Length: 210
Ligand SMILES: Cc1cc2nc3c(=O)[nH]c(=O)nc-3n(C[C@H](O)[C@H](O)[C@H](O)COP(=O)(O)O)c2cc1C
Image (cartoon, rainbow, N blue to C red; front, side, top):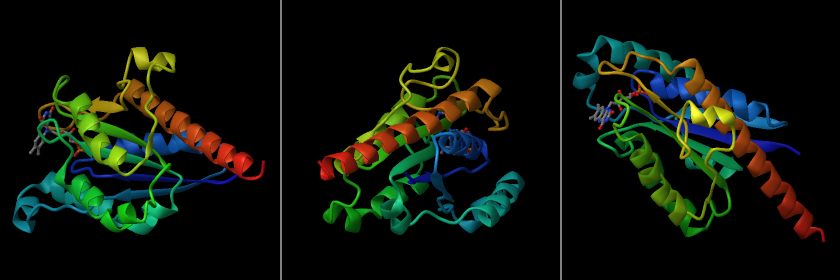
């Protein structure tokens, strides 16, 4: 059975992006996966971006690699991973806008029973990784999505990530990429969540034909 997986993330400097790519690797391990990786557009004013050479470089690279997530992508997906850097313990405005555009899907119940999972990057160890993931879950619950988190379902969860979702700590200058273990935890989340989405899809088909 084929399964459609969407990874929708925002990243300014590339830390959340690195987690997104590791999640993609894990998702692919789950079987016949059709994958879309999308990056939410920058919302900051042009003068703010152009004053920061690292941001400009990352922006140019990422906009050339990834399309922006759309409601069509969300409707297409069986499982959706949402990734965001923290903003004072909350999701970024860029990812919030992706969510805020889902009104037409919510009205028609189009996201009900799709599997959802969240990952995050912060600068500091206790800088809001878990609170950001939980804040991101609020709208996903309203949308009727089935939340699947890593939990402690793999030994890697005892040394990296969080049971709520993969995470990385990028340091004061956001220049410390995810560690090897952060990426292993993200890959585990990708596989686990995709497998659960597959189980749900198979179960739904079995119930429909019984
Ligand atoms: C406005 C703003 C608020 C932030 N708030 C926090 C925070 O509360 N705690 C924290 O650890 N990092 C905070 N950060 C840092 C980023 O979340 C962090 O650098 C992240 O790793 C960047 O990921 P990216 O490279 O994918 O953009 C903040 C950054 C900005 C721009």
